[in-house]
Image 1 (cartoon, rainbow, N blue to C red):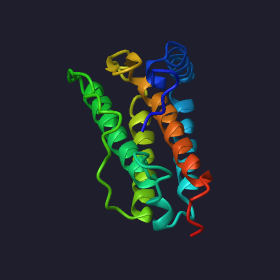
Image 2: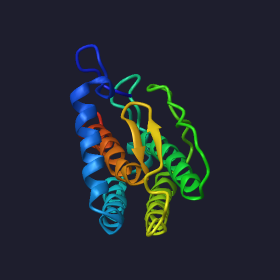
Image 3: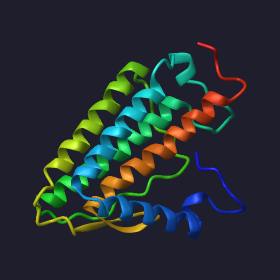
Image 4: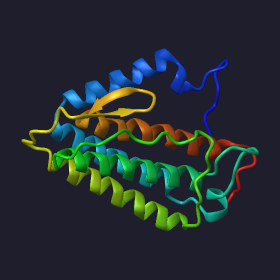
Length: 185
């Protein structure tokens, strides 16, 4: 899944890590209402990304070893659900460990239709928006858990990360769509 630049994946490059952390910190500093709007926009971006994609198109892989769109979406949904669970635990006062780092080329199993994946994507961003709204006045906003590549993020930074992670994977799907072998329908 990850492309390499030189001998490092993007998540091993200090400049990319610094930019990602900076982005999440900046978005988190804007406050809860801004994060809710960002999550709503991200959910809408995902809806547009998947709009009109056929099953054949969603199962297209541009090259051996590269993920098809269904695998990308399934990975994103699984990772996002895990982050949401961690945030919910933190806001309930529970102590959490760190997310288990997934092997970068561990392909998720995918058997769900594009329509179902799209509906799941809408639902998960509704969940993120609800979770974010519930943070208003929370005493736990400074609680943190580590990202495997970016280090410690507080709750609001993790919510902002959902946008960053989503955009990265939407670019992956757009790359698949731009491939010369991408099915017409």
